[in-house]
Amino acid sequence: MKYPESMYYNNPNHTKNPSLLISLLKSVCNVKGDIVEIGVYKAEKYMLFLDIAKQQGKIAHAIDSFRGFPSISKFDTFYKKGDLGVNGAGWLRKKTANKKNARIHEGFVPEILEAIEINTISFIHIDVDLYKPTKQSIKWAWPLLTSGGIMVCHDYLPNDERNCSRAIDEFINETKIKYSGLSKTWIWWIKK
Ligand SMILES: C[S@@+](CC[C@H](N)C(=O)[O-])C[C@H]1O[C@@H](n2cnc3c(N)ncnc32)[C@H](O)[C@@H]1O
Image (cartoon, rainbow, N blue to C red; front, side, top):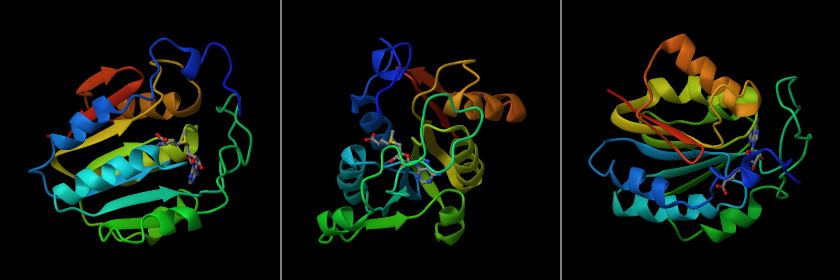
Protein backbone atom coordinates (compact mmCIF):
# COMPACT_ATOMS: atom_id res chain seq x y z
CA MET A 1 0.00 0.00 0.00
CA LYS A 2 1.39 3.39 -0.97
CA TYR A 3 0.47 6.45 1.09
CA PRO A 4 -0.31 9.59 -0.95
CA GLU A 5 2.17 12.43 -1.16
CA SER A 6 0.60 14.76 1.37
CA MET A 7 0.08 12.24 4.15
CA TYR A 8 1.85 10.42 6.89
CA TYR A 9 5.05 8.93 5.60
CA ASN A 10 5.78 11.92 3.40
CA ASN A 11 4.71 14.35 6.05
CA PRO A 12 7.80 15.83 7.76
CA ASN A 13 6.05 15.43 11.10
CA HIS A 14 5.40 11.74 10.66
CA THR A 15 7.80 9.28 12.18
CA LYS A 16 7.98 5.60 12.95
CA ASN A 17 10.76 6.23 15.47
CA PRO A 18 9.46 4.61 18.68
CA SER A 19 11.59 6.58 21.18
CA LEU A 20 8.68 8.79 22.26
CA LEU A 21 6.43 5.76 22.74
CA ILE A 22 9.09 3.96 24.72
CA SER A 23 9.60 6.87 27.10
CA LEU A 24 5.83 7.24 27.60
CA LEU A 25 5.55 3.51 28.28
CA LYS A 26 8.46 3.59 30.74
CA SER A 27 6.80 6.46 32.57
CA VAL A 28 3.85 4.24 33.60
CA CYS A 29 6.05 1.71 35.42
CA ASN A 30 4.27 2.41 38.71
CA VAL A 31 0.76 2.60 37.24
CA LYS A 32 -1.41 -0.50 37.53
CA GLY A 33 -2.90 -2.11 34.42
CA ASP A 34 -2.05 -4.06 31.28
CA ILE A 35 -0.18 -2.77 28.23
CA VAL A 36 -2.20 -2.84 24.97
CA GLU A 37 -1.56 -2.19 21.30
CA ILE A 38 -4.48 -2.06 18.86
CA GLY A 39 -3.16 -2.15 15.30
CA VAL A 40 -0.06 -4.29 15.46
CA TYR A 41 0.77 -5.14 11.84
CA LYS A 42 4.27 -6.72 11.85
CA ALA A 43 4.65 -6.17 15.62
CA GLU A 44 7.63 -3.82 15.38
CA LYS A 45 6.34 -1.77 18.31
CA TYR A 46 4.59 -4.66 20.06
CA MET A 47 7.83 -6.63 20.53
CA LEU A 48 9.35 -3.58 22.26
CA PHE A 49 6.22 -3.13 24.39
CA LEU A 50 6.36 -6.79 25.38
CA ASP A 51 9.87 -6.50 26.82
CA ILE A 52 9.11 -3.32 28.74
CA ALA A 53 5.84 -4.84 30.00
CA LYS A 54 7.83 -7.79 31.33
CA GLN A 55 10.18 -5.45 33.19
CA GLN A 56 7.09 -3.80 34.71
CA GLY A 57 5.55 -7.20 35.57
CA LYS A 58 2.62 -6.62 33.20
CA ILE A 59 0.70 -8.45 30.47
CA ALA A 60 1.03 -7.02 26.93
CA HIS A 61 -1.92 -7.49 24.56
CA ALA A 62 -1.60 -7.38 20.75
CA ILE A 63 -4.95 -6.74 19.06
CA ASP A 64 -5.33 -6.82 15.28
CA SER A 65 -7.26 -8.59 12.57
CA PHE A 66 -3.84 -9.59 11.19
CA ARG A 67 -5.90 -9.75 7.95
CA GLY A 68 -5.62 -6.04 7.21
CA PHE A 69 -8.31 -3.42 7.07
CA PRO A 70 -12.03 -4.24 7.29
CA SER A 71 -14.58 -2.36 5.20
CA ILE A 72 -13.69 1.26 4.72
CA SER A 73 -15.95 4.15 5.79
CA LYS A 74 -16.68 7.28 3.79
CA PHE A 75 -14.24 9.17 6.03
CA ASP A 76 -11.29 6.98 5.05
CA THR A 77 -9.69 8.49 2.04
CA PHE A 78 -7.21 6.15 0.48
CA TYR A 79 -7.21 2.77 2.21
CA LYS A 80 -8.56 -0.45 0.72
CA LYS A 81 -10.15 -3.45 2.41
CA GLY A 82 -7.44 -6.03 3.15
CA ASP A 83 -4.52 -3.56 3.01
CA LEU A 84 -1.79 -4.36 5.57
CA GLY A 85 -2.87 -7.98 6.00
CA VAL A 86 -0.17 -10.30 7.36
CA ASN A 87 -1.86 -13.72 6.86
CA GLY A 88 -3.19 -14.07 10.38
CA ALA A 89 -1.50 -14.09 13.79
CA GLY A 90 0.12 -17.54 13.63
CA TRP A 91 3.61 -16.16 13.03
CA LEU A 92 3.30 -13.79 16.01
CA ARG A 93 2.05 -16.56 18.29
CA LYS A 94 5.14 -18.57 17.35
CA LYS A 95 7.44 -15.61 17.78
CA THR A 96 6.07 -14.92 21.29
CA ALA A 97 5.59 -18.56 22.35
CA ASN A 98 8.24 -18.28 25.08
CA LYS A 99 7.01 -14.91 26.37
CA LYS A 100 4.71 -15.55 29.31
CA ASN A 101 3.27 -12.04 29.33
CA ALA A 102 2.20 -12.02 25.64
CA ARG A 103 -1.49 -12.18 24.71
CA ILE A 104 -2.30 -12.21 21.00
CA HIS A 105 -5.89 -11.42 19.98
CA GLU A 106 -6.80 -11.97 16.34
CA GLY A 107 -10.03 -10.39 15.13
CA PHE A 108 -11.68 -7.22 13.97
CA VAL A 109 -12.46 -4.21 16.12
CA PRO A 110 -15.05 -3.76 17.59
CA GLU A 111 -16.08 -7.46 17.95
CA ILE A 112 -12.68 -8.62 19.20
CA LEU A 113 -12.73 -6.02 21.99
CA GLU A 114 -15.88 -7.58 23.46
CA ALA A 115 -14.10 -10.94 23.71
CA ILE A 116 -11.01 -9.73 25.56
CA GLU A 117 -10.81 -9.82 29.34
CA ILE A 118 -8.90 -6.77 30.50
CA ASN A 119 -9.74 -5.10 33.79
CA THR A 120 -7.42 -2.13 33.67
CA ILE A 121 -4.96 -0.55 31.22
CA SER A 122 -1.87 1.46 32.15
CA PHE A 123 -0.74 2.14 28.56
CA ILE A 124 -2.42 1.77 25.18
CA HIS A 125 -1.16 2.55 21.69
CA ILE A 126 -3.99 2.86 19.15
CA ASP A 127 -2.72 2.64 15.58
CA VAL A 128 -5.48 1.38 13.30
CA ASP A 129 -5.42 4.22 10.74
CA LEU A 130 -9.17 4.20 9.99
CA TYR A 131 -12.01 6.33 11.35
CA LYS A 132 -14.39 3.70 12.77
CA PRO A 133 -11.96 1.33 14.54
CA THR A 134 -10.14 4.33 16.03
CA LYS A 135 -13.43 5.70 17.37
CA GLN A 136 -14.40 2.25 18.72
CA SER A 137 -10.97 1.59 20.24
CA ILE A 138 -10.91 4.92 22.09
CA LYS A 139 -14.45 4.37 23.37
CA TRP A 140 -13.47 0.93 24.68
CA ALA A 141 -10.07 1.89 26.11
CA TRP A 142 -10.70 5.17 27.89
CA PRO A 143 -12.87 3.82 30.75
CA LEU A 144 -10.36 0.99 31.33
CA LEU A 145 -7.41 3.36 31.60
CA THR A 146 -6.17 3.71 35.20
CA SER A 147 -5.47 7.08 36.76
CA GLY A 148 -1.97 8.01 35.62
CA GLY A 149 -2.31 5.67 32.61
CA ILE A 150 -1.51 6.82 29.07
CA MET A 151 -3.53 6.51 25.85
CA VAL A 152 -1.53 7.31 22.68
CA CYS A 153 -2.92 7.49 19.15
CA HIS A 154 -0.76 7.45 16.03
CA ASP A 155 -1.19 9.25 12.69
CA TYR A 156 -3.05 12.25 14.11
CA LEU A 157 -3.25 15.35 11.95
CA PRO A 158 -5.24 18.08 13.77
CA ASN A 159 -8.56 19.01 12.11
CA ASP A 160 -7.86 16.72 9.16
CA GLU A 161 -11.46 15.39 9.17
CA ARG A 162 -10.35 12.10 7.62
CA ASN A 163 -9.24 8.67 8.75
CA CYS A 164 -8.23 8.24 12.40
CA SER A 165 -7.79 12.01 12.87
CA ARG A 166 -11.53 12.53 12.56
CA ALA A 167 -12.22 10.04 15.37
CA ILE A 168 -9.58 11.64 17.59
CA ASP A 169 -10.97 15.14 17.04
CA GLU A 170 -14.46 13.83 17.85
CA PHE A 171 -13.15 12.40 21.14
CA ILE A 172 -11.57 15.75 21.98
CA ASN A 173 -14.67 17.75 21.03
CA GLU A 174 -17.21 15.40 22.62
CA THR A 175 -15.43 14.84 25.94
CA LYS A 176 -13.52 18.12 26.28
CA ILE A 177 -10.75 16.06 27.84
CA LYS A 178 -7.55 17.96 27.17
CA TYR A 179 -4.70 16.02 25.60
CA SER A 180 -1.38 15.88 27.43
CA GLY A 181 0.97 15.92 24.46
CA LEU A 182 1.25 16.16 20.71
CA SER A 183 4.38 15.28 18.78
CA LYS A 184 5.21 13.86 15.36
CA THR A 185 1.64 12.72 14.62
CA TRP A 186 1.35 11.08 18.04
CA ILE A 187 -1.20 12.50 20.45
CA TRP A 188 -1.56 11.29 24.02
CA TRP A 189 -3.54 11.68 27.18
CA ILE A 190 -2.40 11.00 30.74
CA LYS A 191 -5.57 10.16 32.63
CA LYS A 192 -6.27 12.24 35.70
C1 LIG B 1 -0.45 1.05 10.58
S1 LIG B 1 -0.75 -0.63 10.98
C2 LIG B 1 -0.13 -0.76 12.62
C3 LIG B 1 1.36 -0.53 12.72
C4 LIG B 1 2.01 -0.91 14.03
N1 LIG B 1 1.37 -0.27 15.19
C5 LIG B 1 3.47 -0.51 14.01
O1 LIG B 1 3.82 0.50 14.64
O2 LIG B 1 4.27 -1.17 13.34
C6 LIG B 1 -2.49 -0.64 11.14
C7 LIG B 1 -3.06 -1.97 11.57
O3 LIG B 1 -4.42 -1.78 11.96
C8 LIG B 1 -5.12 -2.97 11.71
N2 LIG B 1 -6.56 -2.69 11.68
C9 LIG B 1 -7.18 -1.66 11.06
N3 LIG B 1 -8.50 -1.73 11.28
C10 LIG B 1 -8.72 -2.80 12.06
C11 LIG B 1 -9.88 -3.38 12.66
N4 LIG B 1 -11.12 -2.88 12.47
N5 LIG B 1 -9.74 -4.49 13.41
C12 LIG B 1 -8.52 -5.03 13.63
N6 LIG B 1 -7.38 -4.52 13.10
C13 LIG B 1 -7.49 -3.43 12.33
C14 LIG B 1 -4.55 -3.46 10.39
O4 LIG B 1 -4.75 -4.84 10.22
C15 LIG B 1 -3.08 -3.07 10.52
O5 LIG B 1 -2.30 -4.15 10.94
